[in-house]
Amino acid sequence: MALLPILLLPDARLRQPCAAIDSFDPALKRLADDMLETMYAAPGRGLAGPQVGVMQRIFVMDTGWKEGRPSPFICINPEIKDASGCAVNTEGCLSIPNRPVRIERPAVIRLAWQDLAGRACEGFFEGFAATCVQHERDHLDGILCIDYPDLPETDAEEST
Ligand code: NI
Image 1 (cartoon, rainbow, N blue to C red):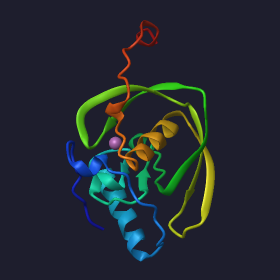
Image 2: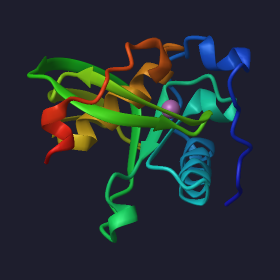
Image 3: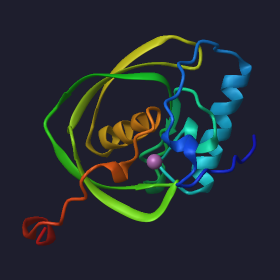
């Protein structure tokens, strides 16, 4: 495995849409392994193809590893099929260091994707995992978290 350099804003590749993946070969498995290693080393919870200069529709994420519950997820050609509710979370991005933003997004999503073997998968995501999936999927269309309104903290949240 190898650590990949992470591109930083304003690298133009972070603003370009990515192509669908149609070749599920050993090179794709190596790429996914390298992306996971790079994400853990960063350290981060999600990393999308364009962030390492790969303009293909792939991201990796692991929302539990920092709390000792590793759950690596490799997501290829993701499509959000359904979304409901709304939740506000603070998001950071490895390509935009030290610029957290509070963003409102749907709270629950139904996602379709392909795994490393090209098999069609589908599942529901909620909580921080739903936020993370939407953040990473945005990267595949050149959309960044700083494109959304940065919401102020409310009194209610500060008191909890
Ligand atoms: Ni990001």
